[in-house]
Amino acid sequence: MDINEWPDVGDFVVCTVKDVVDFGAYTTLEEYGGKEGFIHISEIKAGWVKYVRDYVREGQKIVCKVLKVDTGRRHIDLSLKDVNEHQKRAKIQDWKNEQKAAKWLQFVEEETKIKDEELDKLKIKLHENFGSLHSAFEEAAINGEAPFVEMKIKKNVVKSILRIAQENIKLPFVDIAGFVDLNCYLPEGIEVIKRSLMSANEIQKEGVKVEITYTGAPRYRIKVIAPDYKTAESVLKNASNAVITTIHKLGGQGVYHRHNESVKA
Image (tube, rainbow, N blue to C red):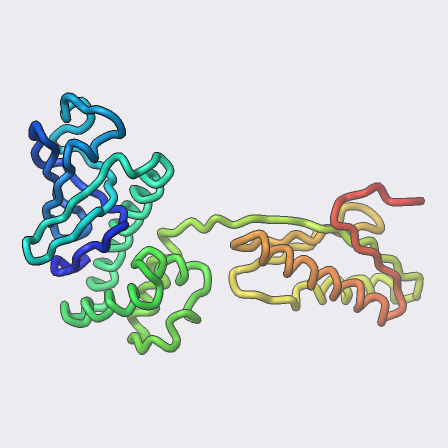
């Protein structure tokens, strides 16, 4: 973040403990240009605290909640006790992700030879449109160029972002499957079944893959790999409907099963 920025009251921030004193601890805020914050002894832990050093030490990375910001005095009051374990883990992960994304953006800068002022403008655009640098790279990995179309970013910069995102981000894909039983007793029955199955592949959605495998007459498995469960379910439903509709139109029969039930004789 820009060193001129200040956190908002209620924000969670990553801090490094700089100095521990009898009445609290002084910290530097990692995401705000090393601005100084202070945790009063009463905000170290719920209940009575005799020695601050029993809970924090110099050089330690901690997550605090912002209680008060005084930009005039350049002072930030922090609380350690108001941060639970879940909030701490989530914030540390976000911070680490943003550090990685900042390095990726450096690679973009080196690869595209953009000037410092262009890089600063790019950072602002990515933050405004995606909320964070890491989210911007995630969007690039999942949806390709689409999220960047209206942002007026140079094509070579977008291509660099896409390449680096695809190389560095492992997407949390899910996969689900359904089954279709297909029969056709016409002379061209095999061709009818093939055409019906091909209709599933016409259900295209960016970032989603549809795979069809034969499991034994008359059953075929439709597997969908997608970034999230909701998308996967939607594509599976549309793909299976396409198969069943097509085979009925061509003179065959088809039944969809969400699970692999036994085939009735």
